[in-house]
Image (cartoon, rainbow, N blue to C red; front, side, top):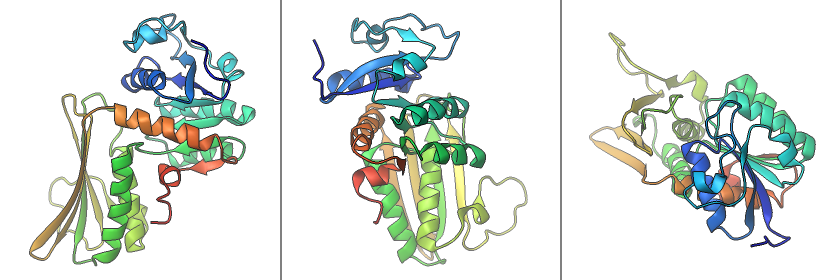
Length: 275
């Protein structure tokens, strides 16, 4: 079937990974989008394979390649859930072409974040630690609750993911931490506790604690705990299928197509930026 001329043509990077395959499947099921290419790192075992077959759809005629540059010439955007180093290479290319760049990759350093922000001067970048609609509502709620409850309520963030995840705390946990810090009007970097071991002493008032669990095939679970005098408020989100992240990423890509160059978040996409 020939795609409509108005369809947004997207390249999926990290095509051989769990999210890459989910994204390819989601593109095929979505209106207004068509798959312009599939990319994997050089040396990957899936290079040369049909992307449709890889995603469990059956052949679609799109072969997985290692060189993204030729694909971007005929594309409107790139979606990637890869590794930080790959994000920077992709950002340079999408910026040069003025394309949409949806970044689901997490674990970037402050220096890498600055490079991405610079690339957003020419590209339409949507970067989020999580593309789930529910999680982004949770982020907005976390900011609101943190603003409402005072320092008598300690904030702890607990997250669990599958045993293949390479960064901790998760990008989503950090999103929640930043939201809580914004609600309290504090600097997260100065009030963040990433782990406790041994004789740590009493908990410091105003700190935001993080705990990371890894195991099995857990897609993603996040809880923000507000522990106060004689009561506890818990906000929780449990992801049951990676499709929720793919749908959010595709929604972000379509939204960004109509925006001017800049660095956006999923809160911008959903209209939650001012909540």
